[in-house]
Length: 95
Image (cartoon, rainbow, N blue to C red; front, side, top):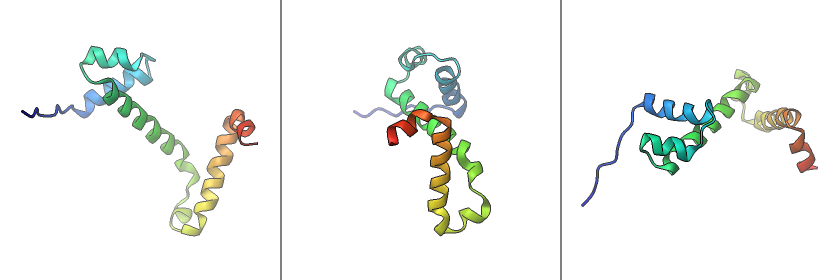
């Protein structure tokens, strides 16, 4: 016998992520209180953090650069430089 997958509204998903990210609650605690799987919530939180990080670095990509594939390496260098300047631990680890 198969069971139908539960579907959640976008509002519900964002609220669950907010409880973990903004209110610093544990994923297991939030998942249990909302009645969803721990791995489901963990995946959503991870995806949200990655998307947020990508949006943070979008300012580095100008319209001209995004249209020219030869500048992809330059963009990667800029992103790496910014990350290293923001986090000295990465510089120590790379060296």
